Image 1 (cartoon, rainbow, N blue to C red):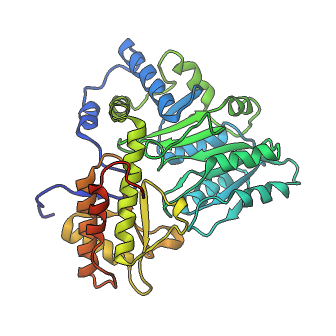
Image 2: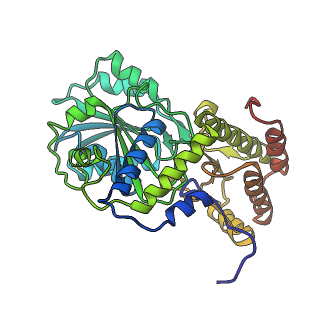
Image 3: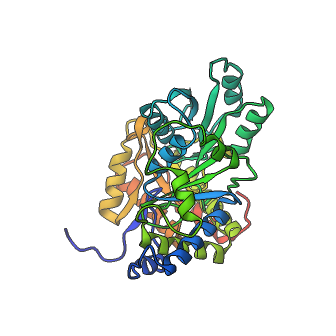
Length: 394
């Protein structure tokens, strides 16, 4: 492999760039995970994540990917044969539904167009037809669909459940939105929130999270899906003193504590505003290029990533290859039915205005080199927006 000057731009929608402060924290010598120093670390991380999830309830941290956190949410609350309603906003919603099926759950999906977020009216219609015995035990949605760039109105789904007095648990995936977009586990009435470490939390992959409501905790008392590693109750007992029932990812916890400190030093509201501005600037570039957003309704467009559709007959993967080879910038690929139809720009985590402009400049040059039908001026449009400063309307 040839040496390249400068740094690689990792602008996929996760894993994201890991800040130097977090890398330094992860690089500390590993400590005894049964000793008193670790207990302080464990308690600090659990409390920090309560603040990030905006919850006063239980939070569990697993050494896992987000997929593991999906499974933990399901096996701790449901029983074989239980019915689950999943809204398919894209590739990752489909994968979560597949995990549920493999666990022996009966899954009904609401087929979305992969170009918008959850339609609460469709959820209401599905629940109104719910004459099954037993009724749906859970409704699962993604707050932010990483494959399509579409965000969803979680409180609207909660209102639908409440309006119909439906007993289903509300399970929400925030893997590509937590610590990048506003989220309120308690205030929004979510029963289980799923998250991962490798996106807005600015860590390497390796930690999965569940935030758990009292209703979900009580559901676990009757849930009969097999669980051992993922068992909340085993975790809860050990977590009370800051420990874990198995060997934890000690050095990632060092990093987690530092990452949350960085987020809180900036201020979570300022973090959300920064992501909103970067999404708006990226949107200005896409419009100036004359390209199409994958997510059609502007109000549904994600603040953490932008999925861009390429013109018919043009290859998104060819563009990505040019941008990587010529400018050392990694962009996200299209997944599932969006394969080779979109490229995805990650603008979440540890980045600033100059990082974003560098990414957009690489894309604009790549579009030209690859012979794509587009118009120049996207970088200028993004710069004009960012130069106006925080608080600039979208």
